Image (cartoon, rainbow, N blue to C red; front, side):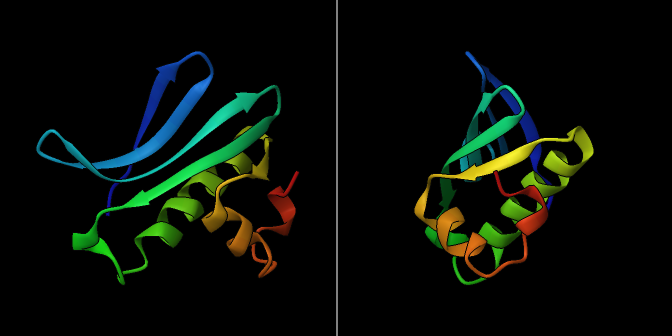
Length: 92
């Protein structure tokens, strides 16, 4: 699944996947200097159970690594995923 990087202004960014005009999957954050404050993950009911939330977080983590950023877990999905240790290298 392809995710598009979106600059929403005021230091708000996201990776999203659209179906037509509708966003059906996204992970968003507020950029605070070198830290991505991960504040929202959404996956449409039509995509649930397919690992899309993990794919979104993986894409955001790839972006963080490439840019030299750290990630702060705020939304419940990211908090839970960070507890598993897979993203220790990008945790703020």
